[in-house]
Length: 521
Image (tube, rainbow, N blue to C red; front, side, top):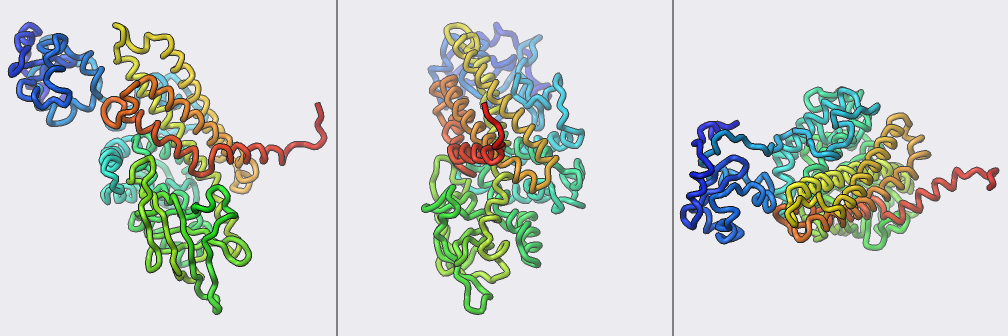
């Protein structure tokens, strides 16, 4: 309890009831008394709302929480209006603190719910989750909501904070790049870091509820840096890794074009080798490149004489980026990129000449799995928001949750988030126990199906959530702001990394490869 709360004047409800008119207006919210006498004229909803007989001089807790999010009362300009507390009463509503675990049923995955056990998560996973959640709540989320609204990129302070705890390294998953590194102050050793640790990181980041900002928060690094790490030549490789991991430079993956999206083999950007073989000249365009507006480096797929080749292209002469406005915030930095006679040294080639298709495809499984992690957690966040709303919103004299038709919606929404999380954890366990080659051979179809189903469920959950919130679910501010954003942006996960139909077909084709020839009905 703050010093301000301990010094509040004790008041009775009868005393508060005397202050019920314009210019002399008090109300009670969760045992606290607020003096709105001067604020009334500035109230965004108008003075008339405050003068309602159920509000003016009354306990307006139910009315307030039917109209406002709890964080409103934590803002300094409103906390200042608090003048007293009802004698003998204590607040009943607990404001979540940074790092806290939700007590809303199904608001957390089962492994974070005290009553449940899990075979997948060790002490190091739980320790990482604890520090990661506090970091996201305190460092990332405030910046995320400000930038999502303003359209600006993530702040320098956030990027530096991420680099300081080695979060950038961890987002690339397990590997030698983590060995010997101090991760989040030592809560997990780099040599022990596995895909469940990475799942924890991805799902905690997704909780911030700012989809555009999230893609601008080094999401391009997650898919653009692995080709450098796995196929780059020294000393370029080490230099770029250090620059990106330390937050000094930003990188993005530049594959998609207006001419080719999922059809990687159809790329039209070209790379022409000089006669002496020392340089390449790149010409062409790329479209819908996440983080492209912020990037210092681009991992570029280009057509060469014998196939496709991948290059690391630094921002410089001949490279131009233009902002693309999409359904989510320009904080994502989504770009249209033009390469006009851009010359890069042969040392910037990633992988073998004409062997770029392998380089491009090598990270698809991991990219799609990362998107499944985020999609599953975002859907869960939406279900939690809906459960809170349906409990505090009264219609026809009863909580919204008392309506059978609403409970039916929740039944389907909860079943979907639980099923996807369980499938995700099953796939993650396989990833932890397979080599890269085994993952490529056995999990491409599984991950394709998982992403397809995750995003289809997300679309259905978004639709139900909007119906539960009504007009608030299509309003960018207030009670339904997270619902509005989710329904507007959840389709990105269904498109980026491979459209649902493409991934569904991929999964079936992978299955058909293993169909035995000696079986019959």
